[in-house]
Length: 492
Image 1 (spheres, rainbow, N blue to C red):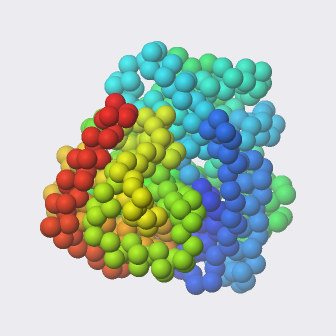
Image 2: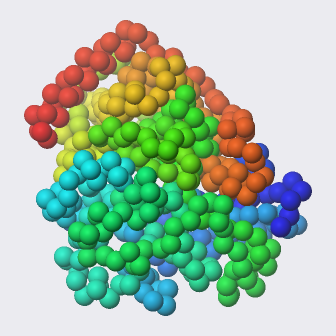
Image 3: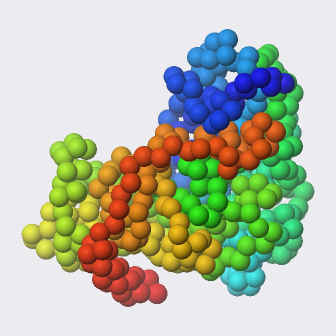
């Protein structure tokens, strides 16, 4: 394996594109060495969100082809391959390694009734303490039970269930392995034992041997199978580190590896996360807890409605003045000056209430209400949801903490960054890393393979700082009370 000035090839299968990038041993992306393949999930009227497993794998192959072509002679310095994939996804596979189902996304809500059924079968508090996950359609227990109820023949004829990252490696190597990181986001892993959870398996029509063997990041695969060994000779014998959950990678990539730095990410969805090391973290109800690897936990809350809400509002409200004009209009408005109270749940609620059937609502509309005011109220409402997650994280993070913002939807809007700072009442610093998930996967692989002593030693570039205004913060505190009242009225 090359060891002098190594490069890492990173595959990032996100919720809107597949990217391949090349990083150096300090986690810096090499200029011009990126390949991107956009795609969209298919949606159904009953809440389905899915994509073809082989179609998505084809994009991975195409991205690797392109990045190797772009790399030229530098491809011979690639020492390892790392992978980041979106958490909480599921695909069924037959004995020959063929996909029998599409890849079901975390956003697929068709298993909402199955989640309710599971609440009658298990003690949810004990389950949450063991697995770090609530019973919710985002996670695999409800998806598996839904498939068993709605498509019994398909379910009975499916011998293996896995995530997309596992499926990709199965296609490449003929072997399926699941990292502790990906397993921790399934709702099927005992976080203390780091084994598939016996408690939930007892109530599901699922055998332990239908799930992949568990590994940490220091147990990579190597020896590509046909036809990929001939297609990519430079990657044939080097280690391929198991796929890691994108949220964990995003924390690492944005420099939020210790509890004194809180990651605030808004892409298609949104999340607020803290990372640390402990044998057994205490998990407040309303939050989840996953793993980056065996030794590092990632705790926080997720929102289904982030950049998704921004895009939907912009399109639906016909804000056609262009991004710059929209940004100016948002920035010129005073906090909570529109008289609106809005719940942002276009795609249901995850943290902290976990009400999958929640839907968006707005009150206070009048003939005087303008579209830009509805958009501003939407962005403020997302910030209120983050404020509630931040409050639950207070026992886990020190009082003197730094909030680092990442994600394309948030970083493209300074007005939204200022709203976040004012609502949270703390400074928010924009990350200067373009693709935090890709960088984080590279750094975790470098550490696991011994090229880094620790991911904490690598400096992460930061961008602009947004300081809160005490008067605006107080105004938002009052607006948050109104927001909570509407939530309780409609959803509790």
